[in-house]
Length: 523
Image 1: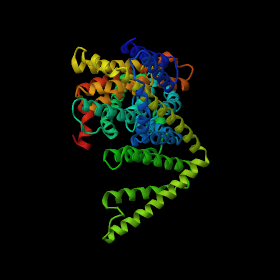
Image 2: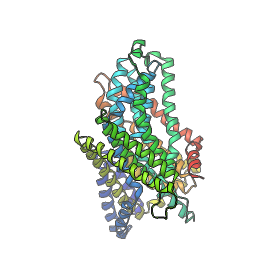
Image 3: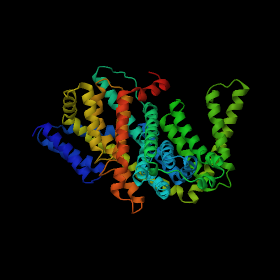
Image 4: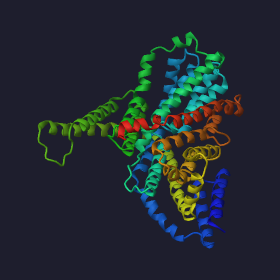
């Protein structure tokens, strides 16, 4: 049996097992070992490829970028448990409620804010489904429009940074780009970082939010009954809207700016920013656990502001010879600020521990992180067997022989990813498909950031496409019985079209993904 036949059988076996619901990690590992041994039996595979696996796992464990994954997960789960979403939805509903489709616009904006703070699709969809959907249905919204905007807004966490998928794709694209450049004879290529992908995805993510809002406005303009405004009485009952708006938006906005701003400005790496986000989310959770005694949290926030100011304005290295009185005073001020932050963090940590939030957040973080890293490790084994059977050469020959050249190759890969999204999860596609096709596409001298953002937008559709769209499952679980599954499917269909349109916009205007990274990090 030839290596090409064996390779085709292995890929078909993996996708078939995943579609039947077998665990991703065990499917990848089992198929790799089984077909690796079969390849050795037919003398088309060398068992020495298996010996490389420990080195690859060691390299993964030493990869500091991947440390950001559990930290971002912790941050997202902690914010979800802090009931940030409920307050944002209620306040935004009061702000935009008098407009046609105002509640839908509120859901889209809150979805974008939650995407930039939590990034967890399931938690966002369930929360907005529980809080916003009953209100929208009670106000006379078309169930198709209501369910569609909730499901679509919940998936924004996949494209608006910081996103776990963007971290994973950033690592995968970086490895693929280096491999492609080495094949082209460039042994010192410019690195592609997760920060580049964060910056590249920011504008397309905001454009996507704008397209959602535009669709809602158009639908409600031509069909006012689909999204009626709230009554004048409801608007009057909203009292103290400005005060509530500040209270609801201030903390999440500061956290978003701190995490994203520190990455995009180059002050912190994604891992360091994720640690800052986890700390900030814990402090926000502790603050909301006891809003009457908030001085400790405010003291810690003041300490953080002082630290950020001192680090950016003064040379804080204590190992050098300190000359001026200003530098000595700054270092002592920094020490006192660190004590204030540590004290406030300890108080918040105790509060979330005492009310049980910390234990639940830790359990969920460990569960999700274990799943992600198990898939990462087993995907390495699959990649080794795939390469050992000559899969990279087969994929290269297929993509380079397609009609249309580079456009034909990119279109085919995007079509395959979109179709696979009907049946597979984004992590499965990221770890199985992207390492196979990305080196070939990047060898055609495509911009790696643009390709990564294109894949991220495409992967976002997998949450909305039946039969295995996870956002549909999440929303179905909290939707009233009178709203049928067919209604949900019809509601998300226009938003899938919008997301595919976003792919076309990115293809026509690649600068949407490449301009901001070039401005921030240079060409």
